[in-house]
Length: 276
Image 1 (cartoon, rainbow, N blue to C red):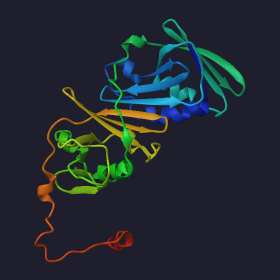
Image 2 (image 1 turned 120 degrees about the horizontal axis):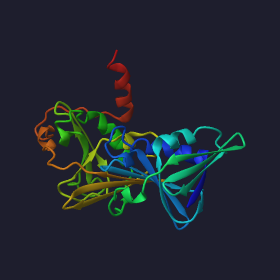
Image 3 (image 1 turned 45 degrees about the horizontal axis):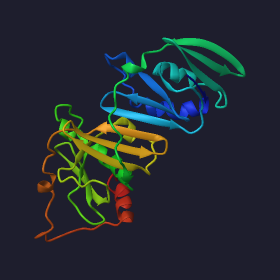
Image 4 (image 1 turned 135 degrees about the vertical axis):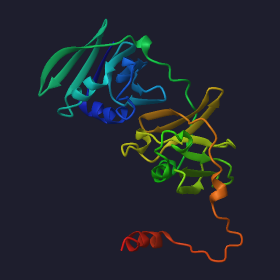
């Protein structure tokens, strides 16, 4: 098989894939990206076993069918240069022949490939639905999540789906000292136990658009969360365990004598006033 991409297309994919390719691993295949041709479509996949990211190329030249495994470090170098230049990757046994066009001149080299059968399975697809406002709220909650690796159930943004109507979901994050929640979302989550979405580099990456589709899958092996946006499909293992009863620490409005309500303009003014 052979694929040909512009460097512009490769540069669109590499930064996002780099958020998932692990920096340290004992499995060499995880330091790579899997390119696969199915029909007329080309995808690039990265995984660290807990999370899997797939990028679908809109415009690529493909010959043959199958998959090749390319080291991520090689892709980062190949993405450099003029956006209109092209990169061709061709399977040649255990090697990959790389044709890199630089300034109109083709430079041919080889890189060591890996057996595509060594690539780990990522599990079945997860159906998704509209999730307006999810990414924006997730990013607002994430700074309140715990960074303590011994408190795994707090290293997440918890999606509580016990609400109903137009605001069925509440996003919650806490580090045990402070807590933040957002209860103005309509999300496709109806599990009474909710789902703990880990704080990940990809979901915080500003290259991921805020307009996403969201899906949650539960099985005996644990929960998984899927986020789709544009060419990206991202699946991540939900954190197992029981999230703390966050509602018991939120003050109850009943019996409260005084209450302050801020408009968005008031809140913005407070950002400037409080530091002074």
